[in-house]
Image 1 (tube, rainbow, N blue to C red):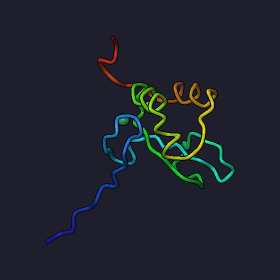
Image 2: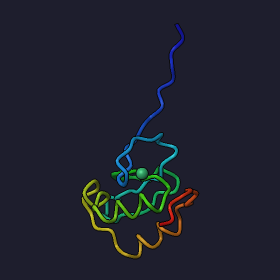
Image 3: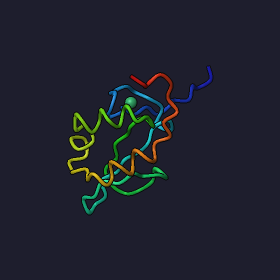
Length: 95
Ligand SMILES: [Zn+2]
């Protein structure tokens, strides 16, 4: 029997659904305690994952999922930055 490759799954802090790690955006809390968008997915620190959707970002900001997962505070600057960064290729989010 051939071995099946396991796809690493991570839970989105917004919708709480498990997705492929590579399909998610990593948010990291650096050792300095700053929460940043980890574009390369390789920054040091504790990581948290979110779907690249503005709806998930909004949920995560509202329920403080990122802050709870990472134990830090999200500055509004970062929230704005994330909003601009997330691709937002979602259909049917209006309304
Ligand atoms: Zn999500």
